[in-house]
Length: 264
Image (cartoon, rainbow, N blue to C red; front, top):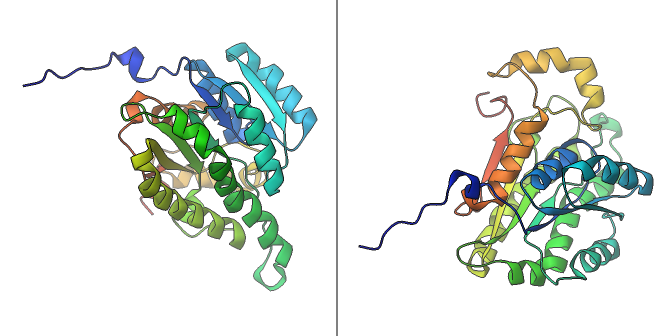
């Protein structure tokens, strides 16, 4: 019988030498993830449309490791291609792609506009697909049977239960992203690339700020764990999915919500 080789605890979560791209990584959940990957040893590229936000985030995250911020508007296909070229220019490979950049639009049903669909779908659904297309050769080059490359799509619990707010295009786009995750997982698994999604619940972020200001106490009380998410909660699940610890998972949607959606 062949002996079982077990990684040490430190090796299970070690990302030293890995290269990662975190879109929308200059604030909120994206910054939480970028910080976690950096602390685990990865070299991380973060992205935002805003050049000033990129500069501030790079400065803030640099204490945790090797980080580079690149401004790009990922709602445009050509900008996804440009970012992919910049990220892979020096090595031609990418170990971890985190599709986090997103948009939300709240407006009542009667007045919900066409632009609310185009803006949200372009960034939340099309952009992750475009980046996978552009970065697929680099992900293939990085992945092996024992250590696949990783794609982590950031969905939402709004795609699992019915959200309280009128964000029709947002919840629909995230449900589609969850299904795209499963479709890509089946196709890319044989190419040594895992594809998983994280479905965050309430976390402190620019997107959630108004909701938490208005309803934060009630939202926390509705969670079986009695609180909203913390930075380490999101960093931890991202490191898990990106590391040896998560190498045998693909096609999974992981709710990180304190039980809000999964026990409703």
